[in-house]
Image 1 (cartoon, rainbow, N blue to C red):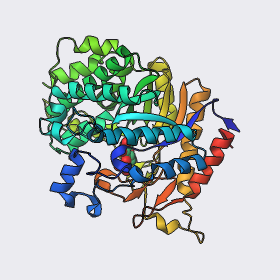
Image 2: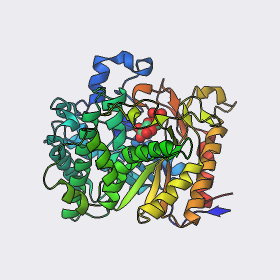
Image 3: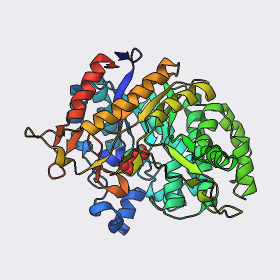
Length: 457
Ligand code: BG6
C-alpha cells in the first residue's frame, strides 16, 4: 500500500459563485458574472446562468453531512465578496450569519474549512470603476480581506487570497472567457500586477492583525514541456513558465519578480505601473502555504512568427499538439499525471519545499447519465482511474521529499462552471438540475475507501 502522510487532508473544492446560488438574493449585489449573464445570456452554455447554481445557500447543512458520509476531512470554498460587502463597505449581516453557520457546520462534522477570498467573482460596483485595472481595487480587496479575517477568523485557520489569479487575467483580458472579455496584453499585465498587490496587501493585513492560522494562495500550474530541446523551443518553454507560473509563484513564495520576466516585459513595452513601496511589500509578505490546481500540462514550441512588441502570448510561445497525448475529449484537456510529480519536485527544489497541497484536480465529463447503472449510481470508473493515476504520481513526489499536505478534487457536488454551465460534471455527487437532488457516484465510494486507508492499494 502507498501510504500518505499522517493527517493528510482529503477533500474537495468549490467556490461561492459556483455552488451557493441565491445569486441576487439575501442582500447579495451583482458580480460581473451576474451582470454578464443579464447582458449576454447566449454566451452561456444552454443559457445556464449564475443565479441558481447548486443551491448550497439553502442546502449547506445536508451537503456537509454528505461530505462526512464520504469521510472528507477538509473542504475549500470561497466567500462571495458581493454577498458579504454588497457595496464594498457595508457588512451584510445575513451573509455573516450564513457563512458562520456554514463554517461551524463544517467543524461540527470534522471537515476543516479552507476559505478562499476571490474566485473570479469581481463585484460589479468595482468593475464599473475598472475592476483590477484600477489601483483602487487593491485597497478595496484589502478591506474585504480584513473584514473576513475579523468576522470569521475564529472559524478558519487556513485562508487563501485568490484562486488561480492568472485565469481572470487571461480569460478577462486575452481570451474572452470572463468579463470584460477584452484582448489587450498591456492591460492584462496591469491587471495581473494589481491582483498580485491585492494579494500582497491582504497577506500584510493578515500578518499585521496577528490572526490565527495561515494564509496562502491557490495557483493553476501547468508544467511546461517543450516540443524539442532546440534553443528556440526551450526559450518558448522558459517564457511560458515565466509568464504563466513564475509570475505569481515567485513573488508570493520567494518575494521576488523574476528578473527575466521583467526583462521580457520591458523589451515588449509591457511593464506595469508600479508604486514606490510595491516591491518591498511583495518581498516582506510571503505566503505560508501554496495550493496548486493541476489539470493539464502545457506543451509549447517556438512561435513561427512574432510581433515585436508582443501583442499576445502567442508572440512568446505557441501551443504544441503532442501526437502521443491522451485527451479528455469533453474538456479538451490533455491527461498527463506525470506532471504532478514534476510539480512536487519543482516545489521541493525551487520553492524552499514550502508546504503545499493539490487544491484542485479532476475530470470533467459530459452526459454522465450514460453511465447510470440500475441502482441509479453513475459508474464513473474513468474518474477513479484519473485520480488514481494522479495520486500515484503525487505519492512518488511525497516519497521523494516534497512537502505536500493534502489532495482536493474538483469537485464535491457537480457544479456550475462559468460559460460552460453544467456541461461537464466533476463531482463525487451527481446534481439533478430538475430538483437539486444529489446522488453519490462510484468515485465517491472509492474516495471514502481511499481516505479510510490513507493510501493507495
Ligand atoms: C478551475 C477553477 O480552473 O477549474 C474552477 O478553479 C473550474 O472554477 C474548474 O470550474 C474546472 O474547469 P471548468 O472550466 O471545466 O469548470
